[in-house]
Image (cartoon, rainbow, N blue to C red; front, top):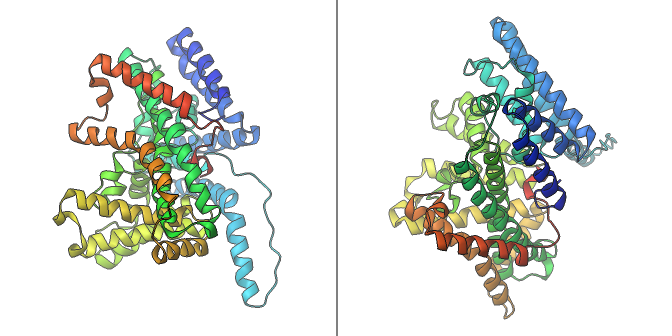
Length: 463
């Protein structure tokens, strides 16, 4: 059930109508039932796996409360092993089995390895990290376990952010769900503009940019170097508008139910360096990896060599989190090297040239990484990069594509520049009311007229 589908619109209207009708004390139950229905709409098997994950981590959280140190370590290990075991089996088994089989073939050993015939449960990487983070927080003593299974189940499965985040922390969410949620008029107003802007970025900007991107990455031999550069730029904006659009819709929907989700993107293309970029891009994942992987490995406390190793391990696993493909691993390693260079080689930092140069340099660095991320294989990524370097001159027809990219992305650049200059992330709410109405009407018309008609899935649903 995609956010940009008629089924979801009907589902949302029914759920919100019931939310307003039932007593406050029953709203958490309603949201849990709606969330399980939302996820089960894809597959009852997916729903069974979600409920099993929820039950196991809830029980482990309770068991941790009074367990002694040896048993506590065993319990948290059990949670981590179960959750990562799910990911390793369902998401990565076929990939690594295939790679191992190819390695053995190089050695002259032919060993047929089993292949799992299963569909990857949508959103698995998101809710597994969210649920596992809860047990780790309880183990560390940063959080008291909840005894209310249904509140915890709603935390794991809340439908606005279930399948593509943000990856929330239990400390932020459990109290909100336990307090019989209700929304205020201010929350609904703020939520409306988040939803509207999120849909605009998704169906108008991202889905139309996808046509440019597919034309190059699905037929790379017919594209010249200039078009490769344009497609790389287009994909960088596509994945941003697609994913941040989802996050905005999720946050806006949550506000209609009285729930505040964390901000997952904070003007990432105004980042001045690779480190700043990761403070602004997919914040829920980057902070999760920082708190539950990078810091436990030692962070930056154990010298330059260990810091570099910790950074590379974290970014490589960040890449692998996105999927079973060497392009994602290479993308993670690329960002790890960027973070290392920024940390260890100060003369290469661009800040001394002024913010615009730092922004541009960081954007180009990030865009090059997304070329690898979007490519079907490392070989294709190398071929595309070689094409861009060897024949960067445009053909006459390429300028029409460039114009299309600029016109599609101009509203995003304009609003985010205004947000940067004002320091107000919700600047749409402060506009002169007639201008606000005009802008609202314009966005709605753009969604209806220019929105891609085929209802493309959100990119991060596959992760």
